[in-house]
Length: 378
Ligand code: SF4
Image 1: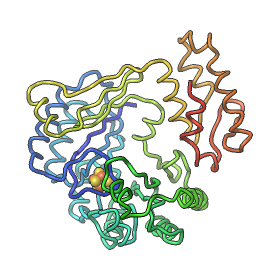
Image 2 (image 1 turned 90 degrees about the horizontal axis):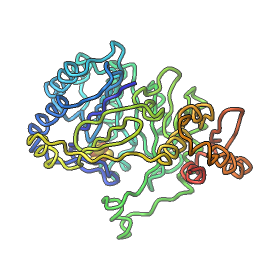
Image 3 (image 1 turned 135 degrees about the horizontal axis):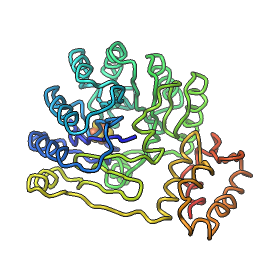
Image 4 (image 1 turned 120 degrees about the vertical axis):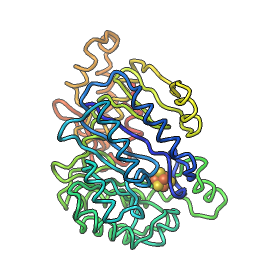
């Protein structure tokens, strides 16, 4: 399923925990848009038509409707897409207005991903989000009237978020009638303002016990409300999984456009430079501002383990055997036997379950997903 990711590298202000690629200056927005259109023209080797398009960032909702429309027109004439393609736009609550929602729908956007993070004013200020709590609610009330496919992002485990507030955030989100929710534990990324504040003792550090408690509550709450926990950070009502992100998790090919965007074709990965000026300059000079990595056999194997372990379906032995059926090394060195041997202690600890064709995490095991994946690596 070919998918296209478009990275819009601008934000109104820098959230204190964020390490994505973005600029808070819109000075070179026009130059960026021209470069992006050139990059769209130059993409090669994509199986058409496209089935999912994802505008991420940064903050794509900062773009004017005319700017989004120009990108959509370029994508359509270069690639085309299926009539039922999933087209997602990441939007921040402070950008959402009734006319904008209407314009987005008319452009063909049929899924919104809204970066709410919390419905509490003090948390939003602490994160340095550009929106306030009233905008969070109001934007969603407007959005659910126009779009049937909406996902929200929420953050748990932040220092001011008590268990009671976390429960209220979930009640509010689900009460608004959304069909998909992505929840992330707050992480302290190096060199972010949050990292600096914690090191200077201006902010308390992350409490991992609080994060585990809130994650366990989240899983129980979402199951009670009829959501599938289909990926470790993602919950969907039946029929509302993100098709775009699911294609990443199934190891399918995708193309990333814009500064910092990554692409993958099953054998290699390549990525654009995460620097707006350099991206604009090189594209304008007719160069491709990219680096490329050919994946080794063990990298491809480990990637399968890591990504699939995070999904509800887990690691599927039949699929793994088929995917690597031409790789002599996998069979000669008995990689499947190694995998089974390494799962045994985790099954005994109650963190993994094995049935006749797959291994998957228990809810308790999801707290340790990265460590368990590391143990299973080749
Ligand atoms: S809006 Fe999103 S991309 Fe921009 S700084 Fe905040 S978290 Fe990062």
